[in-house]
Image (cartoon, rainbow, N blue to C red; front, side):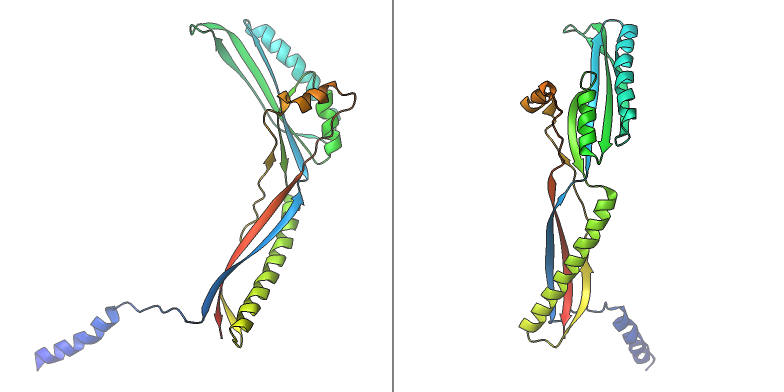
Length: 232
């Protein structure tokens, strides 16, 4: 009898140790909705650089300093344009035999503005001192925040429409939201050809009496939300 009692006492514990089965309702439906919009980039960044080579470091520094100071005086006079970053470095130059035969010095500047005309004028003004390496169009944080609100609203409208469409099509009385994953807006910057400075367009720009107007262009923003509902 004692053995039987012990065996019976062990049964509840054995049952409790078994994992509970998670069942998925037969009326559960998963789907996705998408919103796409073409938006204009509202910021332009232009990376400019100056590079010189020479056998002696001191005269090389002087040449670079003169070009930088002249260019910076023009940049600082244009209030609509900001210097986003700047960098300068000097490296040793070697000949084909691996012997040191001079120095290479380079300075880089990234100019940024929402005023495309002012930036175009400035790039033209400093073209004797600095060359263009690349041009990049961006979406400002303010514009991105506004766009995110607009697209999320449109995404939720599409979600409700599709959920109600599924409910009606399957003759359900209603639905219950189980899960809705809303994405984070990701507006990738658009970068122009990095060889732009050597292109025929830039050659025309340097020769033209008026600076060529820089443009930001547009980009396609697409967001997708994944949803799961239970039909009732």
